[in-house]
Length: 205
Figure 1 (cartoon, one colour):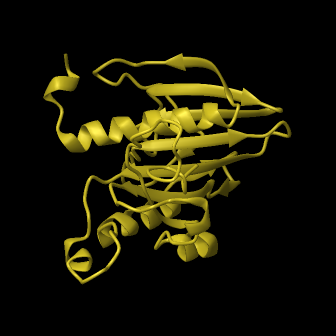
Figure 2 (spheres, rainbow, N blue to C red):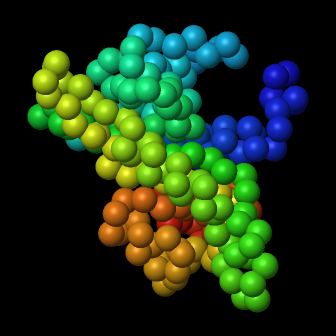
């Protein structure tokens, strides 16, 4: 019943989270457990609420919806301000190393850019700036002296319309930035056919 009163932007965020869950399972990651914290978003001391866990070939994955990091959360934290990415994907390898990707669902298109004739749909610039902030602000603290930035990539997800057929794999307007610095965006839209990856989520997949 709570879904019926959510805005389209909130529904898009939830759909993006569930779409990443589907992609992970399509890549043969087996969901081992899940935790739903409820509408009030009860969080663990680490800052996590709703979480899915997966396993495959010695890799464990944690997919979290709206984790919140602050100076009080450990071992992942942030100073000065709280940060709450919409989606966090953490992969931990059998040697203990872990890397993180964060995603923010933005149900917006850059109007100034898209008004240009034949210009591709792009995400607003402030959404990309937020990806840079997440990567810089989220810190993994091993102990009182050892710290690292664990965010390997930060990406906005937005409702851009593209043909994502394999032969057009480099047509994502953010392909170069993602390859060079791990910051960018992926257009993400529902597919008419669940098995059709030529549109909707092929580039993120």
